[in-house]
Amino acid sequence: MANVRPSPVLRRLSGVLLGVAACAACVGAGTGTGAGTTVEDDAPQPARIVELVGVLTRERIEAEAPGWAEAVGAARPDVAAALELGAVPPGASVDVVLGTWCGDSRREVARLWAALDALSAPVPFELRYVGVDRSKQEPQSLLEGLDLRYVPTFVVRRDGSEVGRIIESAPEGIERDLAALLSGARSGVISGRDDL
Image (tube, rainbow, N blue to C red; front, side, top):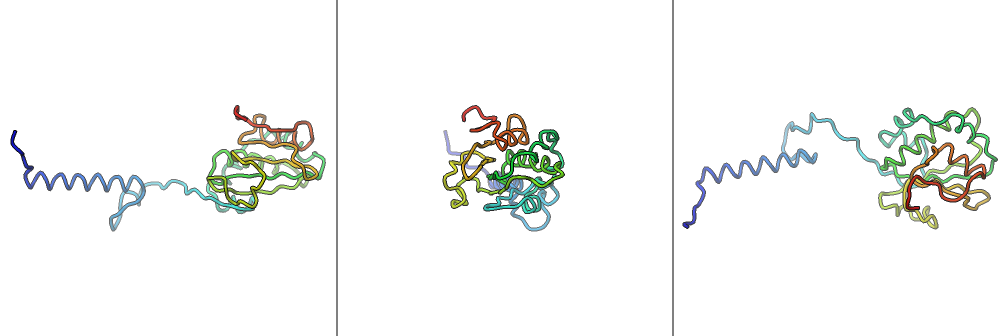
């Protein structure tokens, strides 16, 4: 069989088609390469993912992490269980280790915030929020000794000693499971995961 070379017109057409395919891939990935208006300019942009790391506040998370404030408004905690949070013995602390990039963190922490909003009195325990990166390695100094595997993780301490933690999801609702740990009705690990 003889070697057949494509005609110059066919070679030019294949180059154009390859260029169109490459451009479509760039637009689909949100990395348009041409000048002027592209398809991506008019397309809805996905919510940006924010990775806040270190000691955080609710106000900063709601201001800087898209979707968190809306998640609080959409959360429907058990109000009776939420009121139990306000009645636990004072003196405990809760470290909430979360990822602002994590859907589980947004769901559980937003529900906790909605539960706390239902209280008419100040919270009788100390709350600290620690944002971690996606590898759950930073901020290293705040994660020492936590054995963190999943976020969110709610670490409950009383008199400086850990009494329990809620990992990733609270099977009875964060307000009920957290109240159980804070009151001493439960201890140890509480999670919706089967592998812990």
